[in-house]
Length: 200
Image (cartoon, rainbow, N blue to C red; front, side, top):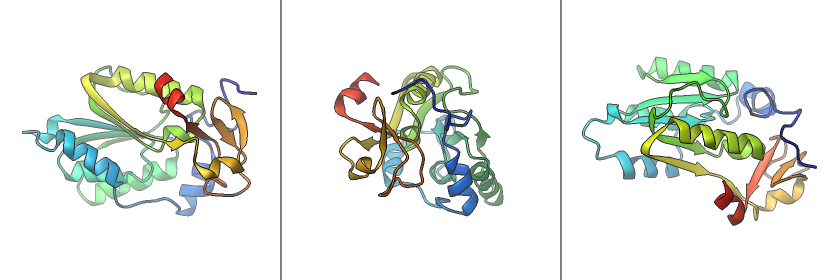
């Protein structure tokens, strides 16, 4: 049965395994950005006369690899992440390289920024590691903080992903307790089909 919250989720909206079993053990502390993010950012904002005026927010920024790229390219960056180890890693890296960014620990479904603050909101596989209610709230918050004409890049898992078959369905496209496959040990995952994407 699907409910509006999962007892396994942290107040940040994310599953505790990302801190306990992933980042605190040195896993997924990626140094380089994902090509989908690089292409999207440069395609839409690469020709800006003053990149520092383009504000980019990333939801669930992990090790900060995507924001690191954007900051190095001259954009103004901010991010929110629920795992304190990942936040500290990203902040240390930014500081060591002389980069600036507003990198905060917090909840993707309760953003601490004013409305119409950002030109671009990035979600590179973060919201799909929550439940559908958190996903929906985070998208509503993203819309609130986006400027008129702003853009959202959201990369998620298809309901046709073979790893889904290893999980226990919670309803609404949410799965948990993976017994094997790609998502084993990664907590809750939301899988999207076309109708679900259109509804979101």
